[in-house]
Length: 152
Image (cartoon, rainbow, N blue to C red):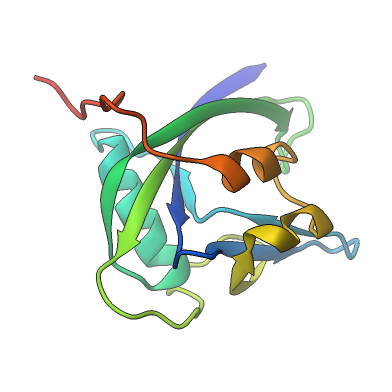
């Protein structure tokens, strides 16, 4: 069985560094990923990314625009018979106030830290998904905007 999920991710930068979550698994495997998570029913993607950033990294952000969309699939952690197909929407976000990385009140499972990561050091890290490196080194907001938000 395949389950498809919309995931809203935040690209938060201080100009040279990108805010990332570090996750560590029971087998000792460590990886870095962007803050963000599943879109809830009735929630816009922008609302989802703002909520997830607050939960995971205890920051309040403004959404500036959609940077890109990417997809990947993997077996579900709790049931390998289920494949999770993620459609991930990466939004450029700005912090509302000065920020020192801290864990949020509802961190992701296996999340062990929140870190500013320089774009130059991305190639040395295990990223999830792996293809994030090229995307994060070269992102810019599209003009005109490609995401129009919730339209009724």
